[in-house]
Amino acid sequence: MDYRTRLSQIIEDKREKLIGVSNKIWSYAETGFEEFKSAELLCQTLIEEGFSVEKGIANIETAFMGSFGSGKPVIAFLGEFDALTGLSQSGGVTQKTPEKTGGNGHGCGHNLLGTGSLASAIALRYFMEENNIKGTVRYYGCPGEEIGGGKTFMARDGVFDDVDVALTWHPGTTNNVWSVATLACYEVYFKFKGKSAHAAASPHLGRSALDAVELMNIGVNYLREHIIPEARVHYAIINTGGLSPNVVQEEAEVLYFVRAPRVSQTEEIYQRVCEIARGAALMTGTQVEVDLASALSNVIPNTTLEKAMYDNFLALGIPEYSDEEVQFAKEIRATLEEADKQYEVQKNRSMAGKDLADSIDPFTPDVFMAGSTDVGDVSWIVPTAQCMTACEPLGTPLHTWQIVATGTTSLAHKGMLHAGKVMASTALTVLQQPELIEKAKQELVERRNGEEYMCPLPPEVKEYKVRI
Image (cartoon, rainbow, N blue to C red; front, side):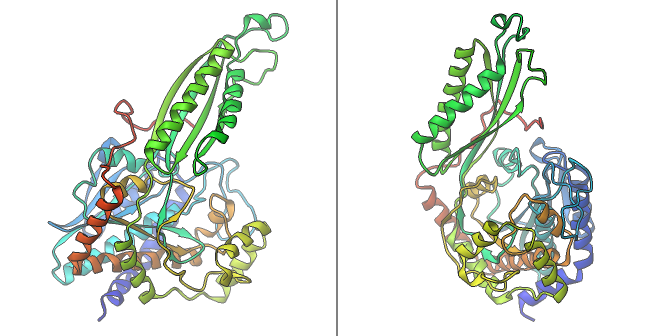
């Protein structure tokens, strides 16, 4: 029996169990670093499937590692399972129907992501045992991808240092090997402290922290013209200082994301943003506290691993969809803006007029993506490859109610399990061809271009603190 067929068979044998895990994580909808039930469920499933489990790695309560086998090579699958705030939504329906007003929802499909990687680890574990293959398979439970960057804390703690190859994926609207270079990102809180006063009777006695926030934001908006075009700077005011206009705001706080292609570039822009914040404090007679909460490195693609993954993807093909799944996709697409639907077509003209992706995109190495992920920190340490499988209708934007609604459907489950098959097959390819591992490691050295991994988190940031 072909190894891909056997790995796929193992995953299909576990289909109902894996779907159950994904749906439970979807229902828990826990946000970053608070994924207690989701992490426990994944740990328990790993134990049931013969893995030893180490919880609380890198001093993070919801970070863990499941391991099977011993010795080299060490193959790692990265799993995420955090949800997003404000995206509560009923599953399997085609209209916006929040289950809980203001509640959380899996608007990025991480219930699928974590379970698809789990499927890979389980399949590889049984195949290795059946065929007496030496090596170690690991599943890393990585919290807080959406905010906080759990993998960065884990990387700083050295949990990936002995890994030879890392594989992961992401639910999406197309089928492809995701050879992307992303942006490094700093997550920074600027907290201004002023002095309250009656805004009508004695405004001259007050010092407005909200004025400082507004002036800072204006200053940063002027900065945009004078930073590299690939950079991104965006913010959210998370504390306006109260609801009474007749009280000078004593405190106010703004959260910034600062992004650029390299950590060194991000650091430079971050320092300039800090200077603007200090200037705003000087202008308003307030004080400012700068709190760098988390930081992520840029992703380094690895063509060696990506080509191996692409070959396996082509050999496995893509799932077939039922009439009911196609109809569901059509109804979801009817709720999308035309610009969302056209965005997909602009990237691939063959998708015009379709509701679901029906092919595998050609392999295109080193695509730039103006987003960020803590997979970047892993990719600086370990050769890393990622794929994407169609779990949502074409054109569906991430971080929307439509993604949450799709997350419990058979359409999403097919994409999830197929990603598991692609990653498990890729892992077995490199186990059978150890020269690929060495080639991938050499490529990583070359792409780092003389730089070694330096965690962007300063030593004083011991842990990520959930604040919003």
